[in-house]
Length: 165
Image (cartoon, rainbow, N blue to C red; front, side, top):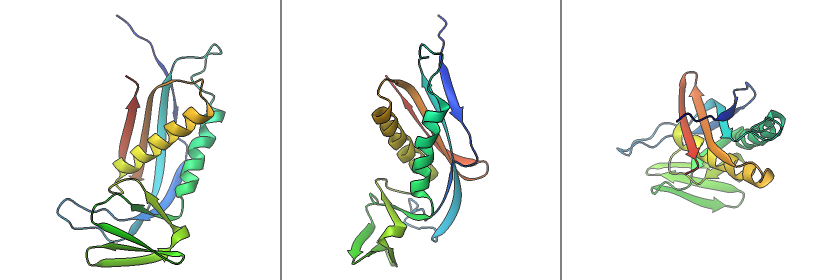
């Protein structure tokens, strides 16, 4: 039986953010603190409205742009990593991983509810947050699928997909 579906896809140059991070590997080793110029892509699938739209691009783009602007020029820290210790010191945060100790102003750090700052985890956090914000702002749109990809270098990205059962 044939089935039809509709989606919108957004791949805009301005959906990017620059951020610092380090990955922690399964063997316990970790990258040095470094940064990327990340780029975000997304696709929404839903039923067509009576006006022939999944969603108006002009309504969706500001929501994702708001998200990437919140991440821009920050150090992204995986607050749920079991060996990463975070302590507040006045207006700074102290981040410790094994024998490494970092300190930075609180305003420069975003503690994300993830266990590692991989492109896959960043795409899932952005995807879940985008889904939450879209549902809150546009409750009449029932998303059938949401796909988000985060590219850390050209041609290298992690992705997340939400599909309604």
